[in-house]
Length: 78
Image: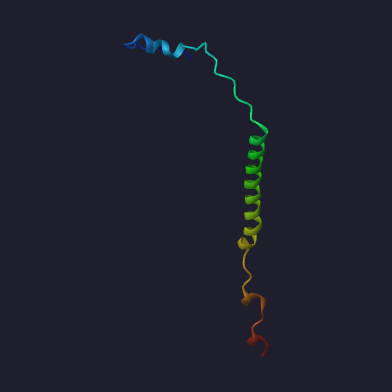
């Protein structure tokens, strides 16, 4: 709960944690319409790629139907 102050050899090190700058950073630049459109297209491309890989990959993940299980053996009929 209480921070213990340890002695340090340099005073500026001890006061560094209390220092707050009075200089504000410059305001952020607004993104233009082209940049927003580009980000949107990249996002849609990534989402479409993931959806396409899921669409084409799901049939490969399904268990394969082995031909021996679906057909009757000819030895059973004789």
